Image (cartoon, helix red, strand yellow):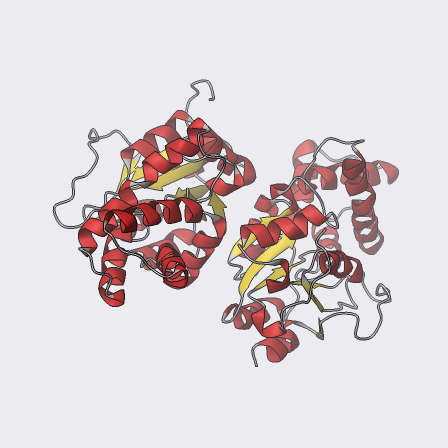
Length: 239
Length: 239
C-alpha cells in the first residue's frame, strides 16, 4: 500500500484499466441466453445468478490458501459442477466443458465497443480482470473490444481486490498508480483501487444481475468520475 | 522441455506469437531517422548497430545473475549511456531519457499492420518479445498493430531464448505448445521455440541491420513456414 500522496490532476491519467465481468460484458444476459439455446432443463436466471454467486467464495478459497492457485476457468468449472449436481443434472464431459466456455463468449453491453474505441484515442486501454488471460483474449475478440493490452489477476497470482493486482497493472504499464484509472461497475473494486492510489470511474450497470437486481451502495462524489455508460465516460474524458 | 511428440497438423495452429524487434518493427531505420531528426553528432547507422549490439550481452548479464532482473527499457538505457560516453557525447537527462524512448516508437515494416489484420481473422495474435509490456503497448499503438494480447519476457522473468518464455506464452493462451506458432526473423529464436514444441514461421528481414546486413544462416525446410513478409504469410495461412 502506498502512503497517502496528492493525486495528479485528471489530465495526467494515461491509462484506463477495466473490470470486465458486469462492467464491459453482460454475464447475466449471456448465460440466460446460453441456457435457452442449449435447452438445459433449469431456470436460466437462477442458474446464472448461482454460477456467478459462487465466484467470490471460490476466490476466497484461493486467497486463504485452501485451494492452490486456480484460474477462473477452473473456478467456474468447480462451481458449475456443484450447481449442476444440486439440480440433479448430469452432462457428458464434452458438454460440461463447452458450457463452461460460455464465459469466453459473453456479449458486451451495447455501448462497450464503441465507447472503448473513443476512449482509445486518448488513453491506453487495459483489461484488469480476475478472468484469465485466454478468457479475456476470447472476450475481446468475440466482442470486438479494442483493448491495447490484456492484464489479468493470472499475471500476478492474486485476485482483486488484493493490492498486488492494481499495483502490478501500474508497474507493467510503467505508470504511477495515480496515472491509471480503474473503470468498474462495482464500488468495492474501485475502493480497493483507490487505496492503491489509482483514480476511479464508476459506471453502474443496473441490469448486471438481471431485472430487479440491486446495485452495491455508494456515496455521491465517492469516485473521481461517474458515468451512465462508456459513451458518457468518453464524453467526459475525451469530449 | 517437453518430450518429443508428434506435432499437430498446421490446421490446429490457434495462435501466432510474434517476435517484435526486427520482425514486426524496423529498429535500424527508426533509430537512424531519430539520430538525423535530433541532430545527435554521430553516424546514425553505426549508432543504431552499436545500440542493438549491446542487447544480447546485456540480457546475458541478467541471465547469468550478474544483473538483477532489468527490463529492456533499463537495458537499453545502460547501453545508451555507454555508447554516448564512448563518443564523448553528454546529454541532459531529459534528452537521454527521451532518446531511450525511441524504442517505444519504432516504425513497423510496411507490410506489418495489413498482414497482421489479415492473420487476425483466423488466429489469436500475441507479441512474444523481450521488450517490456509498456514498450510493446506503445509500439502497437504507434504502428496500428492489431495484436490481441501483449505477451512479454517481463511477464515470465526470463528473456528469450529461455524456454520459460515460449512455454509461458502457451500456458497463458491455454494452448498446447504445438498449437502456437512463433513468427520471427531470427532462426535462433525459432529454434528455441521449436525445442519447446512450438511451430515456426520464418520471415527473413534482409534490411533489419541496414543495407548490406547479413541474415543468420538457416537450412532450407528447417521451419514449418517461410514467408517473404506478413502479406505472404497471410496468403499461406489464411488464403
